[in-house]
Length: 279
Image (cartoon, rainbow, N blue to C red; front, side, top):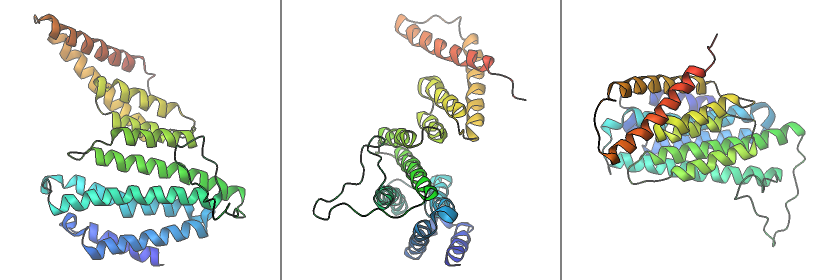
């Protein structure tokens, strides 16, 4: 009941026209913190029944919706303003929270993820080894996948940080996504996020590779197909534009750059032509 009430109040705030000015007010931060605590409590009390729902609710209501609100209203948010500082703090706090949650889940369920991620919970030699909880197979499964999702969320937060001026967290985001893949290689979602992170690098070749990997994964992500189609449409447009400009004479250095561009764009266009027609 407390969770539903907190969500309802947060929805009312976000529904306001000037919501972007309201979200970082102390009372609203406090409300999100309260919801976060309740969701975490719910996760560990009923991991099988409500764990996943609590995770998704926490991510969406406490972090993601605030991020989307700020991104949508970025024209109103000036560099180095109080609002931008609050947004930066929001992202940093999110990374801190999910790192802590990731470590806590590992510690609580005594998960052995040393071979998957490069920073795991460490047993304090003075305290000794923590007695493992009597968890069912389904609970252990949830815990493993919750760690995977924490890493995806961490990647997303680092990716959003990377969009800000003066911040370079691209490699950090990439690292989180690849670690998420190490924890659950069958899940394609991190590849989709890597595609988004790659942006238009190498005329979209890198992003295309990531989206294709996502689609080919055992558990693919629906949005990847749409993302891939968008890139193929771009490639077709670029290819036809290049064909129009071929007659221009260029200096050797510029010609080399143009040749590389033509190669990559042509490769992308060929890829799009070779794709099976969707039914």
